[in-house]
Amino acid sequence: MIRSVLTAMTCLLASVPSQAQISASPDATDSGFLDAGAAYPYLETLETRLDAAMADRRIVGLVAAVIENGEPVYIYTHGETAAGSGEAVTRETLFRAASVSKTFTGTLLGLLEADGLVDLSAPIPGDVLRVRGSRQPTLEEIASHRTGLPPNAYDLDLEAGQAPSRIRERLASVDLLCPVGDCYTYQNIAFSALESVVSEATGEDFGTAIRSRLIEPLGLPAASVGTAALTASPSWARPHSGWRRLANRAGDPETPYDTIPSASGLNLSLDDMIVWAQVQMGARPGLSDTVRSRIHAPLTDTLRETRRLGELRERVDQTWYGLGWRIYDWEGRTLVLHSGYLSGYGAQIVLEPETGFAFVALWNSDNRPAWWLWPTVMDLRTGDGPGHWLDRFLED
Image (cartoon, rainbow, N blue to C red):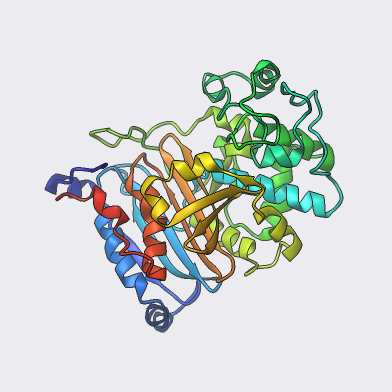
């Protein structure tokens, strides 16, 4: 069991207080706050759990929101953009979204397919990516991690500064764990091969295509791609790395993963995450029912993901991957979700499209409690459990 030790001194590190709003809409009045609190009484318990968890000194900054019936009903912000800075994180603060970026890539592919610009059943061109085996993976198989390559193949080489194109060439000599299409193995480098497909279909580089076909038309207020765009923002969160660190020190946001934006390159604010969740659930315009059904459909049975859930298998006993999205069966409820991690940053988005529920969160530090926020929310709102997932991090 993982535990974080809390002392009176750690509370002194949280120089910026937490702020929470329970609201009926993003612009709700005080009376709206009370209406939403009455409609969703679990939010009061959630706030108590959040406040307790945020006392962990390793949580430097965190922003989160709960959406019900397609509208934000709860906003929570805690901490600072950089430890000791006194600059509070807000709804507008940009964080790295890490692998939540894959949800944008999958959605873009769904749109391009609907427009007849790509055929996701077509094999990836051999000059972009080649694997050993009897056939090439299709675009759909790459987007849903069915290449047969070992999990996270050559990620360490990317982190060492090697060019993605050069690494993809080397994948041609890697022995497959299973035939193409037969098993789930999560990828970053191979996933990035989809960028060339998007560029060929749109006539734009991948970052431009994301901006012109998703960020701008969907009205995401602050979303951007890459480190330069992150640091140019009026408010951006610095990373704080180290799972066992004894002090919080802001680090450098520069990352080799900027070179594969399709897999891990986006920057998002809490308001961006709220809009993205609403669009994915059909609560805001931008995606047809056909596209949403396509990208959220379970394509790959992800046994590896199911096994690594540990205690969470009390609630989730089957998982899949779609086009850039994970799909979980939570006690008979279908959740569409993804998480993201880069050193010093974390991100989560969890949707239940059938009911219009979503939980979204972003943070700028390596810490354990934040990863268990969404199961806490699910337990509290459904009554499927006591919502004690965060208790393991609290001092006895």
